[in-house]
Length: 290
Figure 1 (cartoon, rainbow, N blue to C red):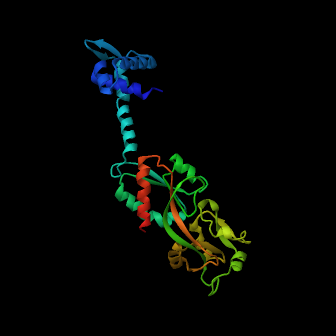
Figure 2 (cartoon, rainbow, N blue to C red):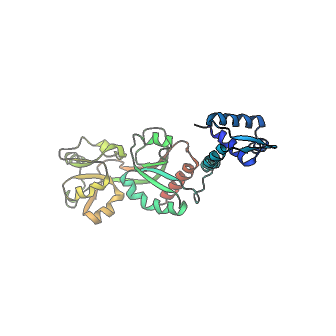
Figure 3 (cartoon, helix red, strand yellow):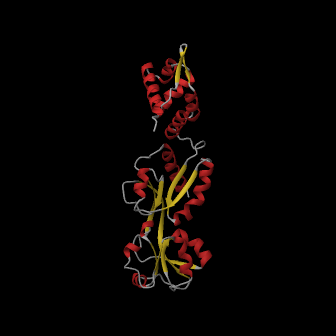
């Protein structure tokens, strides 16, 4: 693999016509230019330049090489500049955000059109949230942001977005007029959300699921399961208005202290790129206003 610096020297010599001018352009000494040209000649196995008066004349091999690599130095410089100076109205970046399906239901209808307005050439890649790997992915740059009600396992920045409360949900008429007791909840079959999504607040206070319980990975399965069976579910209250209208379910308060949660946006301690540095506070400001 050729050193980009050799390509940079080669392009400068081709465009300037002399080693001296190429050295001035790149702010190098003429011996450094000569050494780089010789290294490139040895790497390609071809003579690249012949002396011509006070300058040099490219060979056919040099002209062929130039046609292939002339744009590489400028492209590399533009890429580095793009990392150092992110301009949302001009950038064409793909941001990756990890959400539960609940987060997708709540946040994406606001996030997608706002991003299209603020950064019209940028794209959004939404991946399932896994709290066991999210912190590592944030630090490595594989993720720009993760949103959850439980912290990922690792060192991350936590930026609060909103408060919500967990409630008990059941089909209409399933529990009668009064809120269920802790004993009644413990003995009833329920829908359990698997732990990697971060929704474990209520489950951490419950005994193992009773016989007949169902474990799912997404919230989207819950309303139809609850509406058509005797299963209970513990879900954030924000979901109930829409689900009650569509599925005929009811909510009851839980017999536990402090069933409120704070949903956070989680980011790397230090943004890996200037694009991420812009994206994280922009998302937080947007979603805090909901």
